[in-house]
Length: 168
Image 1 (cartoon, rainbow, N blue to C red):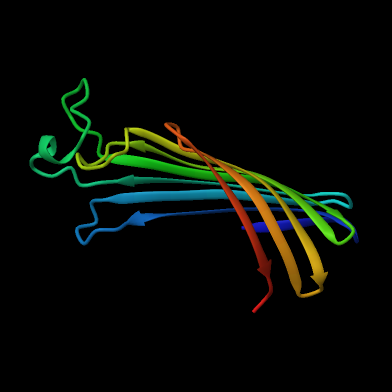
Image 2: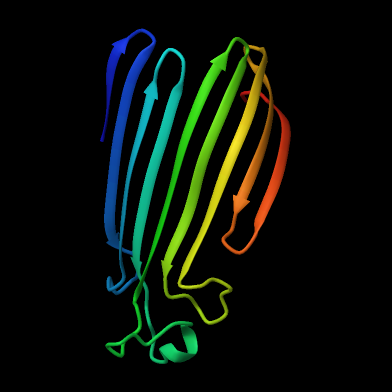
C-alpha cells in the first residue's frame, strides 16, 4: 500500500507499507512474516528517504539440535526455532546546482540461533555510514564519489568509491 500527498510542484510526501506471511516448506510447518514501511519527503532544498524491513522465520530444529545449533537449550530446555532479521536506511540528498550531496546511514541486524559452523553470534549487526557526491556532467551522465564506514561490531572498514553512472 502506498500514497502520496502533494504540497506543491516541488514538495510531496510518499508513504508506503507492505507485508506478507506464509510457509516455505512442503509440510507447511515453517512459517515466516515479512513487513516493511518506507517514506520519501521531497522538499525544495532536500530529499529525505527511509525504509525499514523486518522478517521473522521459523526454522526446523531437527532431531539432534545440540549437534546442529550453536546456542541452546534455553531455560525451558528447548532451542529457539526462529530468527529475526531487520534492516533499514535513512538518506538525505541536497542538490547544489549540478552537484548532489548525499548522506546515508543503513544497517542489517540478525537475532536468533545459528548453525554451529557459523561465525555469527546470536545477535549480529552491520552498520554503514556514507557520505557521497554526485556531479551531473550532462542529463544522462554523473560522476560519483563516496566514503563509507562499515561498523561490523568487531571491526571497522573504510571504503572509497569513484565511478561514472549512466542509465541503460
